[in-house]
Image 1 (tube, rainbow, N blue to C red):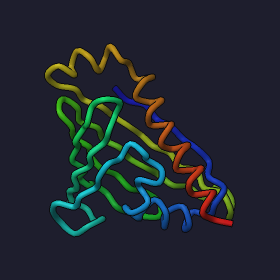
Image 2: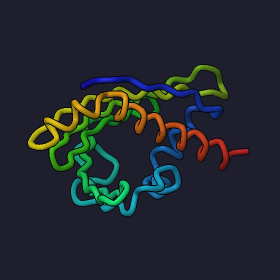
Image 3: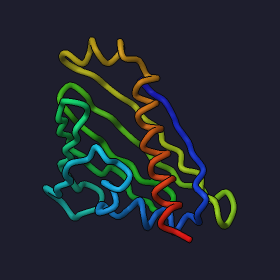
Length: 147
């Protein structure tokens, strides 16, 4: 399953990247995030791995992030693996004007085990909606911390 979401943020690309690239900010725009723990590699660089723990309703979901590309301010990509799900995300940041940035997020999901049945039943709209929710929350966070 593949989809792309995009959103325009009313900030220059360098400010967007400074906020996006700081793991301390993640819980400010992903309220379901309980913890972010670096586990290997140089933090924030290609090959680095981190463990993320989310509270999704009544369930806790642990996933491992592996950074696969870091070419900021243009691009940041990684894989996110949880039980039965592997997600590839490629984030691109495009300056549309000196004070506006378009964030484009390409997502691909592969499912295994129980999720190979449930993932397709849930459909790409459910996954895309959750991804877009995080993008909107990031936009609101970023625009609220900058005058």
